[in-house]
Image (tube, rainbow over all chains, first blue to last red; front, side, top):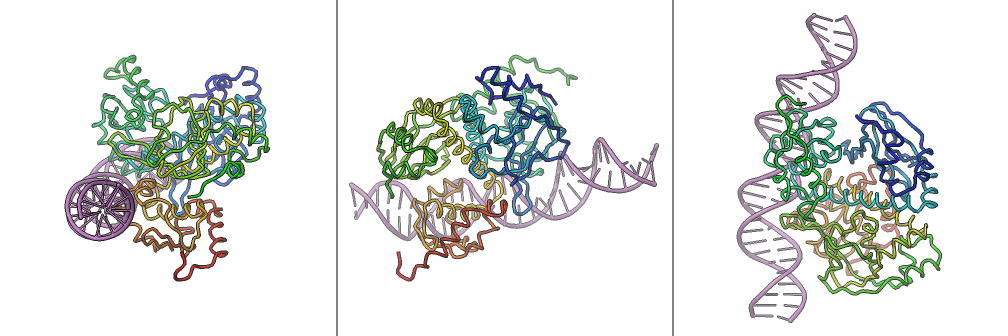
Amino acid sequence: MIALSVTDIAQTLPLLSGMTDNEKSGMLKEGQVRNYARGEHLFLHGDPAKHMYVLCKGTVRLIRETPDGNEFTTDVMIAGQTVGDTELFSPHGEYPYNAIAVDDVTALRFDTAWLKAYAQRTPPFAINLLAELSRRNQLASREAEQHANMTAVQRIVCFMQHLCTLHDFNPHGFELPYNKTLIASRLGIEPETFSRALAKISDYGITVKGTTVTMTNLDAIENKVCTSCSIAGNCPEHKMLEQKMNALAKPKGGAK
Amino acid sequence: MIALSVTDIAQTLPLLSGMTDNEKSGMLKEGQVRNYARGEHLFLHGDPAKHMYVLCKGTVRLIRETPDGNEFTTDVMIAGQTVGDTELFSPHGEYPYNAIAVDDVTALRFDTAWLKAYAQRTPPFAINLLAELSRRNQLASREAEQHANMTAVQRIVCFMQHLCTLHDFNPHGFELPYNKTLIASRLGIEPETFSRALAKISDYGITVKGTTVTMTNLDAIENKVCTSCSIAGNCPEHKMLEQKMNALAKPKGGAK
DNA sequence: CGACACTTTGAAGACGATCAACGCCGGTGG
DNA sequence: CCACCGGCGTTGATCGTCTTCAAAGTGTCG
């Protein structure tokens, strides 16, 4: 679990890109450092959206509960990502999901009212917000599409690929960053189905043994599963993976 | 099919809310009136996102094509709605879907570059954009959730309810605004499944005969289907429907 | 009238959810 | 140190839902 310092955040946070160092530090000093223990919630569904969070350490699960008691994991956020930015300018100002710490979490907490005012007087920040929301929209709509058109096996392959680039893992072999039940919930499938599906993904050039994932054949993924690949033609995610697989040596027998 | 004048748009367009009349007309005069015949496309997937469209007349279908030739209808937009606003500040600047006219369409077309600059120097407009994207995000993520947790019948009921409020129809009886194949595609289900499911939705207090929809029992919908109802407790959409059903007389025998 | 798109119905099959059972592991408490 | 427990993961069997393929009915428009 990597922890990010304030300077790390200033460099990596998409919401701050293109802003001057002065502007960055001016904004970051408004953030309060908050810690959350495993299982604690940052906020609950229906709470007034008073804060936005930048995660520095740990993993946060965004969950919506359905009437029949089912839980649906909307997303899983990691260090360097932002929670609650979508609700900053939401018309009715409530969080539409619970945010719960999967492990011990450190976050920078910002006041919504202040951020709103800040966005109004700092156009670059407003633009960054717009770009971020735009990106989220695309992801969300692709999510819905995948659920409608792809089988569980295909969605898992997609997810593994995404996981690998997001966390900057070595495609030749990496460990799952959280447990399988959480992944299944994130993908909207049952743990049983997930378990069974893992046995079948070797057709797509991926092997999963225990918690270790190995990607062996990217061509088997490309144009079969990856939506952005097969539709747009050139998928940045895929190219990154390819470069990395060529650059990194294949781990030998006893390598961890 | 209702056509909107420029003054109609100035009043109803969410993106213009809270702006002065001067600002509104200043922006609207930048829009070019464009007409599209039935079946014509406004733009295609992968096209550079050069324009944003405000629909004045007709219906536009947003479609993504999957590798295996399947078509997935991301959304169906009607007069008074905006197409391409999500891509205004999209990082890579391409439309992620096709936009195709379902019937004869009139739209106001705005230049993306101009809008971007305009948003930077007009904070209220940027804020409206943020609010709109925020709203879209919520809809998209609920879409994904519904697909994972609800049956076809339930999704249809949800859709009918949404349709009724969106188009301001009379719940006691209205005509479907476009054909069933399109609706099925919008819901991510096959036309056959859709057809069969229509026979079963009477359990939820809705009757569909041919292209006529009648809502008879809102209680049967509430807390059974409507996600925002059962989760948030008080769903604005539902309340509107309820008020309307009470206000409007039940149509007698030969009423149209 | 004929072509064509849309809609409906039937029958078969694929897929995922559900219920149930079991093995595995880490932790707790005696 | 061992027994017990709970959470996690896997496997099997069954069931409901949706898709797919096929066919036939409906409607509209030239």
